[in-house]
Length: 247
Ligand code: SAM
Image (cartoon, rainbow, N blue to C red; front, top):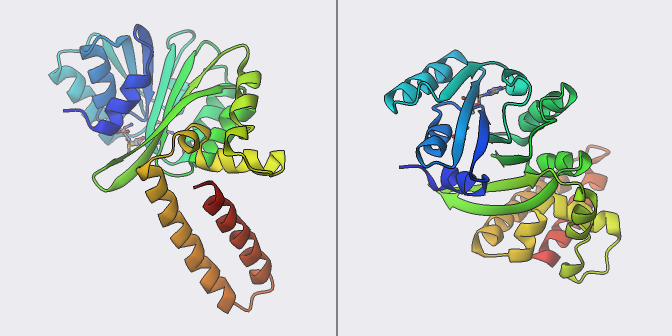
C-alpha cells in the first residue's frame, strides 16, 4: 500500500498527466500513478545505480516495463523536449530540490511543464522562495504526519496570472498583523501561506518543536563569547516572537 505521503502527492496530480518523477528511488509513485490511471505515461528519473535498479525491478514486477520509462541521470536532465506535464520531486532536502529545479529551468526542461508537486524533507522555505521567484503559483500545500515524521507537500502551477495570485497569497492579510509587507512575506515563505491559513494540530506541533530548537540555540548563544553571538541571539528572539504571534 502506498504511504500517506506519496498518496497525498498523487492526489495533487492533474488526472491525464504525463508525469516525470525525479529522484524516484523504488518508483512506487509512478507505478501507482499508472495503475490508478492518474498518469497516462510516466518517467522515473534516478541518479544512482542502486535505486535505478530498484525502480526497474518495481516497473517490471508491476508489468509496467513498457509504460514506465526508468532513466538514469541528474535531476531533470532525463527529460527530452515536451515529455512531461507534471514533475514530482519528493523525499530530498529543499536545497537539492532547488538545485534540480534551477538547473532544469536554465536548460529549458520545465518550459512545457504545467505543474510541480514537491515534497522537500527539510528546507521547504527554499522551495517556496524559488517557486515565487520563478513565477510558479503555489496553488495548494498540506502538512501530514506519518511514522513520527512531519511532511509538507507543495503543489505549484504554471499560470499566466501567477504573480497576481501569489501576491494575494503572500500578502498575509488573513493574519491580521500590522507587519511590514516584507516581514509578512518572509514568514509566509518560511511557514507556508496555505498551511498557516488552515492551521491544524500538525502545523502547531511542527512549529512548537521548531520553537524549542530556536530557544535552545538562544540559550547556547547567551553563553557564547563570540562577537556575533548577541546579534544572532536578538535575530532568533525576534523570529521566535513572530512565529509565536501567528501560531
Ligand atoms: N521520491 C521517492 C520518495 O519520495 O519516496 C524517493 C526519495 S529518496 C529518499 C531520494 C532519491 O533521490 C534517492 O533515490 C537518490 O538516489 C535520488 N537523487 C538524489 N539526487 C538526485 C539527482 N540529482 N537526480 C536524480 N535523483 C537524485
